[in-house]
Length: 236
Image (cartoon, one colour):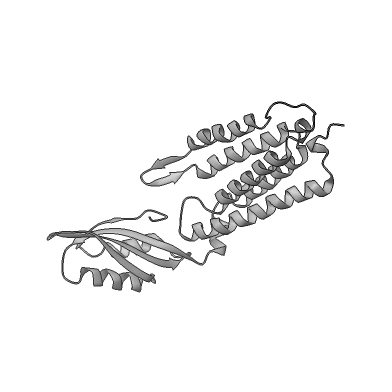
């Protein structure tokens, strides 16, 4: 008798769901650390990628039992599935945009990848796990639709600036004092370029998540020796 994957016992289905859930937790922890660093790929993106990867693995291991159980089978039914994983990655990459050092579309790309995993599961006859993964990802996407929930959890975040200023005595000390006055902690300064006329340096620090970065930048702008300030959310 041929054993179809979607006829797997309930205990097996729950085990698959547990694997997806554990993968989501692991992805969320990694995404949380990235969110603190203000990187483009945060909690939601990491959860989606982790869940999709777990589902791909489940389909790869258990999705072809109905074919492989047939005596005399002489083909590899997983070859098309492998090509889907590779091919959909190119489509997902096309949704990622970089504009003025700001990255967008990462979560959309991860969602496209996860959708491919769900399609493979359903196409392979693993109806229940495909539906459960869809519901799980839907809930994750709705909960983490914006950063409001993450902002409540994260206390401190990275704060990075690139500053171009006139090369004058004590300019670095003045900037450090101004940053400290605006509650920027663990300040470190790295000189990127220096000449007789100007100096360019990179500032790294930690601020409270509820603090407005714009207020800090405007506080620095009061110094006439500062020529330009570049701020990119997420830093380097």
